[in-house]
Figure (cartoon, rainbow, N blue to C red):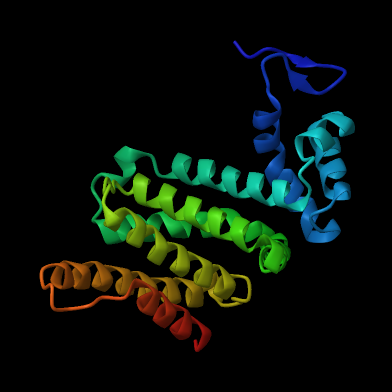
Length: 229
């Protein structure tokens, strides 16, 4: 049985700041479209959820990055809820990756302006490392949900390539005014085709010691193609 909320905070007896942060994150995103990733967005989210403003401020005391991090984490949870293991079991790997990324985009869709503002923050040089971490986390969760169990260098290349694809797709997505985001879906399909071809290419190159495969060069080509769409 779930404990009732404590009137003075709006939190249940067993709710932690981490779980509160996750609960409030989508509401913060909804307000960030208008107020930016700011204290005002947190305060409005707290009011919407019936949570004490000071408690909400404590949950997001890391500022904009704490808010964005929590929002993306809430997207992870929502994505996995939409596609549990049994729903993915009958799909091919390409279909699983596509379904999971499209699920993320559908969850983000109501808050595209908040996403645009988040991208502007993540693009700042001082947040480059954190942005890379968040991209890696998303790619890792998607690959794991898709059933990937690689522990060798494939673990890293798969996440690096999918992270680059997902980041590029998000930039297309925030500016896509086509019906049902058809342009984004087409862009994503082409990029995932590239990932699948990449995996095939790795198998060939790793079987031939005379070939010298460059992961940075491959990622650079992905970014070049994305920039010229």
